[in-house]
Image 1 (cartoon, rainbow, N blue to C red):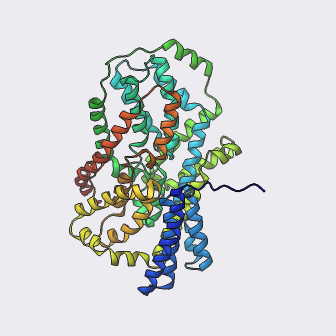
Image 2: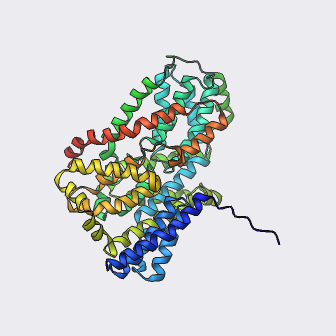
Image 3: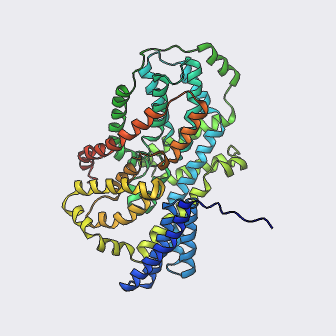
Length: 471
């Protein structure tokens, strides 16, 4: 019988030992302090799950399954509370947006649009950079997965390089690579459908708060911050890259490719109409009073009904592991409130509540840095939800709008420094390395600057939020 060899790395072994020892220490601490039975067991289970996330021992949905299973077996909360996340509007909104994104990907409408942009390409480089940046912004509310957006920008850059005959590793192509990346990720917190974590925090809002900050209202509230981010980007772009003012484009080659594609296919028409209906429907929510979740779900149903989204795409194009994680984490966070965890946290973190009551600006600064530090420890996926659970009761007691806390956390957790923190950057890096024509160091440097710019943007946005009566 062959001898089994251990493949567990030292860091992984340390992680599993930590998942055993720290929950045991928490259990002893809870016993000494006479905490209630339900609270004690929930803390042990929840911390074990958090440590799995911190050490990245398993995929992100596995700790959620573990926590749900353990809570159910011990009967800590009613099953209706634990499973409430799967019946929430956030769950159906995420499902619908993933489906719409899959339709856009499988059709060639984006590729065709890219060629048409190249055909009418302005000869001024600054306008080209703006077009690439705006294209990434356009994808942000349509495709929730940030990795999908940056993956779609990569082939567009390939076509752009060939058509404009750009030289590899030169400043111009590096600037366009940076514009494509930042355009696809910089406004993730500004749109409700900009990234997956937004759905998690949105699902924790009360029904009234969800209605108050529907898709369009969320966009309006975050618009000033988005404007400041965009202005900051182009100021940095001018300082970071020394590029020529004009460029040449192979128009004949683009026309030949468009001719080869022929007329719009049924899938392309369906994708185009779905995107138009989605944008119009979300923009006019105050008129028809249909929630974003059911509007998206209706469009999603029509696409399935007419076979535009087939069985294969339905399986592969939708991020089912994340959807399970989303439903589970919303239910788990509601369990914290059910067993009185929010009251306990408020009691032990009273100094934070004092800051919130005395100075909103100081509290916002503390929230930003908690989110920034939390992303190092918990990762950008888990940090917003876990921190929001802790901070939400304090914000409500101090009469601070929960949307503000959510937005600040989402902005701060996007302010990553090291590539390991960002799965979508690793995806982009892999695609750019395969192409081999760009240098990503300027893009990383730009992202580092935005760690500080995001904080400044939050501070400068406070008067705008006061004017909107969010503060």
